[in-house]
Amino acid sequence: MLAGCVQPAMAPNINSATARVLDAAGIQAVLAPQAGCCGAVKFHLNDQEGGKAQMRANIDAWWPWVEKGQAEAIVMNASGCGVTVKEYGQLLQHDAGYAAKAMRISELTRDLSELLPDLVPALAGKLQPAAGVLAFHPPCTLQHGQQLRGGVEKYLAELGFTVRVAFNESHLCCGSAGTYSVLHPAMAHELRDRKLGHLDELQPQAIISANIGCITHLQSGTATPVKHWIEVVDAALSAS
Image (cartoon, rainbow, N blue to C red; front, side):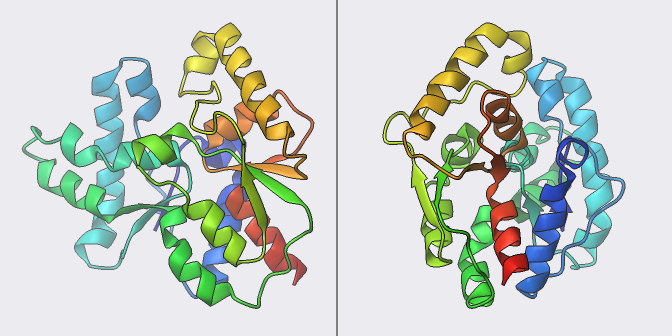
């Protein structure tokens, strides 16, 4: 089961690419039509009750599949959403009507990159990766929030891609940081340009990331294409 937030409106190809790649690997992706924003944006703006209302709405949208055992995982292809949904159990622990459901939803939630160990053997021989370096920016919500480090680089390399992270400060924020780029644009742009300077040293054909906030923020400061890593996998699949 796929889940997303503002991403379908801002970059619809990410969800489409995700579905195509999973299908090629023999994994069926299902969208719950009533699911919406994960609640992270409202939390960033200190509207915690509004955020929790969105969390409950998502649980209601996903629960029929979970209750019937029809969802092996709830897959997030935006790491900012992933880190939030993985915290539903904690955030709603005192809600008598949702605590148990929220915990189960969090247990089932996986970042898309956590599927890569299964995707690599399933996609072996089906891809034709483009030549050139892909510069990977690991979002804070992936490497710090979810403690997922090194997986994207490792498994994309096994699929034939040349992926590099910046030589310096790859652990630092790009400046997007939820609503930070809107509320503090000067500092956010300074962080963005600093990050892009390090990534440009790799002379990449494209920059890849795993979160829509990072992708749109970085793209606003460079002519180099910035994409979700699943999009380059999808492109290589289409080229084969």
